[in-house]
Length: 343
Image (cartoon, rainbow, N blue to C red):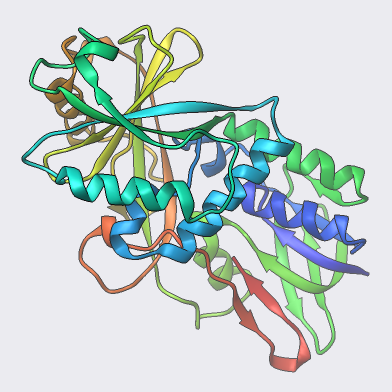
């Protein structure tokens, strides 16, 4: 019998497997495809504390995220690198004092870090001819760029090294809950028993709850799609830009795979976790934002590629998807003296 059965091989499932196996628990993880092949490979490729989350007073989340950022920096140097982020200042958006205060907190709330602290500078003197002439003052801070899919794979690799069992391209046909254990039947008719079951399926979390766990008392989530565009390199410097768009949302422009610039992300609520098609209005939104700032203008014909990922966010009954917390939740079910953890 296993101690923990994990459904889902994204970064959450992989991280749980690695941590649990490292604690000498007997762990098995099931992934319907290849580990790290879905949401965990469709991100903006950043490890960050969530600078803009400070506006929602998510101080604990930012603090924990910054601490985790530094842990990953220390243990995964081969797939992460520090990257300076430039915030060009505009008088019609967030005031300079607010950005300064946010960066002051961002530098310190996570404790001691090896990344440089933020600063302000003259954009025209430091990085001329990249942005429109009306952007003169700018702020700089640091976060990490990461190979998100490789990060998931490394967690799985280490989990296996610690004794975990990982099964890819495997689905579940039935789950039965008994008084002291879970009985899981796989699509190949293999039957597995486990003391604890963890649903770490990301956007598919409620589908698994309903269709496999027969649990209709789950927490409401909202599925928010984030889309990205890839262009041939828009500038040569090894820096990223954090743009404050007209609607006060944040859009990043990031060096990507040496020859490209990655632009993202949008926030569009969807009902289907499999709806990954980028919509025309998302393309236009990102292009308009880029053209608001860059000297070099872009259009749809210049798009090299695009991708979208869907994030499950906990409902907090606010209208704006931007105001939804990016915090995590463990929904614990202890009936029959057995824990069902939902991530």
